[in-house]
Amino acid sequence: MDAAAVTSYCLAKPEALEDYPFGADVLVFKVQGKMFALLSQRGGQARVNLKCDPDQAFILRDLFTAVQPGYHMNKKHWNTVLLEGSIPRGELERMIDHSYALVLQGLAKKQRQRLELLYEPSRLYAGL
Image 1 (cartoon, rainbow, N blue to C red):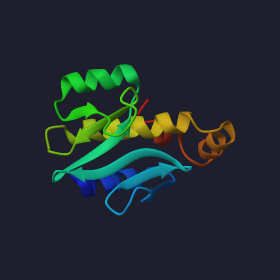
Image 2 (cartoon, rainbow, N blue to C red):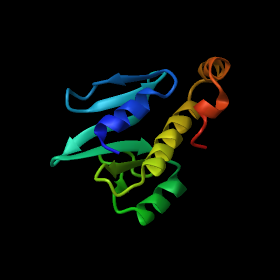
Image 3 (cartoon, rainbow, N blue to C red):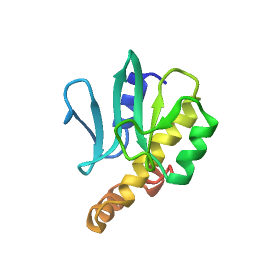
Image 4 (cartoon, rainbow, N blue to C red):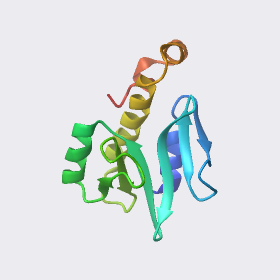
C-alpha cells in the first residue's frame, strides 16, 4: 500500500476527516476530533503512525521490520509503519481498522452511541 491508498482507506472510515495540525507535510486522520492515523514522509520514505494495543504493538514489531515504535508518539501505544511494500495490504488495512476502533472506544459514551446508531458496528469495530 502506498500513501495514496492509505489516504483513501482512512478517509473511507465512517466520519473520518483529514487535517494538517502539524504543517502541510503531515496529514492527520481524525474521527470525532481524535487522531487515528498520521501520514508523513521522512528521508523520502512514506510512513503512517497507527494506534495499537500495547501487546499487539510489540508482536507486530517482531513480525515486520517495517513496523517500528511510534515516531514522536507514545511508543507503548503507537507504531510507525514504513510504506515500503513489505506488509501485505490486508494486514495494513487491519492495522488501520484496529487504530480506528481503539480511538472509537476512547470516545465519550455519547459520541460512541451516536456513531453506533448511524453505522454498522462491523464498520466501526472491524479492527477489534
